[in-house]
Length: 394
Image (cartoon, rainbow, N blue to C red; front, side, top):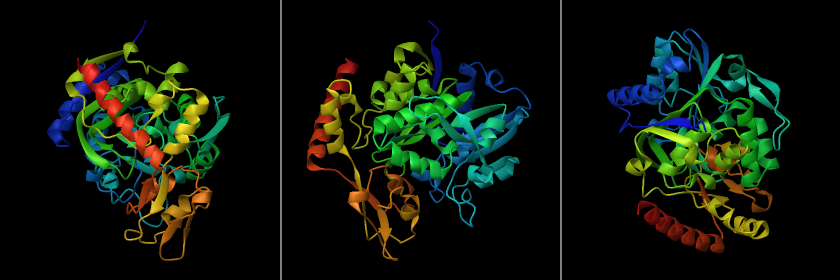
């Protein structure tokens, strides 16, 4: 049985020496960059650029210095590079405040907001999707690289390599899919459908500083100190999620991709080179309050659905933080987010719990509420996770 190879390498911070050593060692363990990128090839690089206003230390986006060192390696290959993500539009340059624009300009690399380059209808024939619109630069490139960020996610539990592809489709379609697939398991099947259409040639995950708690934008930065790289993006997610305390089978995108033969989600099918998981695991990593997928394979579907309903997170506006910018209103797929012109609020009867408003709020003015039963379930989950971690160390 051929196993996917994943490089798991220490990188303590974003200092140029740490990044250079970490990225070079990661690629050497995988056989070198030449194995993935032909010289002078047209290469698209997908970053995670969720927030256009977040400084690098918030750990919301792929760190600009991480991107810079990766781009320097590609420039040395003579690659013709395009970097991009689909980000909220406006009169200002959405890549400027995060430092991404400066990095690309300094290296002479093309940087695009994917909504400005167009999307191409692509047939998928997936589990829940038959077609999707994918960003043109991805399809026109000879190969493409995935540079995700290790983060929790208040809807899908974990976001990494597979979910990073969601930014390859237009915002309007993303909102439609949130509205259509409001259960996290079906939504994750959709993400795997998208992944099946355009899997990356190489994934290099920024896990130097990740995010715990209520990610992908309102959680807390958490030092992880790693780079995780592989030709198999599913295996990257499996290893990275295990490092921070998840069973990879708890992460729907990983489990579904494994079941469909799109990558290795089972650690037994992965050859880890570099560090050992047990030597670098983060033992106090805090998951999202919605992270209870571990129950799915242990309970009847009706009971699991009931538990999932109790665990739903509902957004609520923190009025003291709300600036009335209107971002939550623009991104809400159902009209649940509303405003009186000065402050926003959420109409719970219209909310489908997609948490788009929570992800996009630039001032982190939207908190997530949970029902009392859900909080009790989470308390039990935390006890279970701690006992399970102790058992695995024995």
